[in-house]
Image: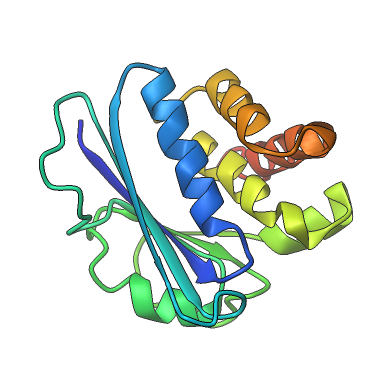
Length: 176
């Protein structure tokens, strides 16, 4: 059941936090999970990616080689990180920030940042909107487990907004 996921965008979008939360949710459900990350020296605005491997069996090589899913929150991330995506995999794009869709057969476009602003009130919640969408699209962890993992990881005064962001992301990919 090994699944390899890549979350990508620019520094400050929270893709690393989203990947950590996803991995923690998998572990909470008794799965094996590893998470790694890399980002440019600029921190905010520089290239950022985080990878998660989830499996039922032990994971001995914690590096994503052929991702089953790539989330791209910027055009630069989409262009750079989708190329080794499994041909049967899924490319999930923030449709507002990735106007030029890469030539890939399985693409889901979601207005992630726009939804974070319009439905939750701030672009800060885009990573959690994305997380809700990814949980729905992959089925790798349950919605209840991801809610608990988000609540555990985010500042207490933002839990309510983050729960709303998760639901917005979940709802955004209904039927996709």
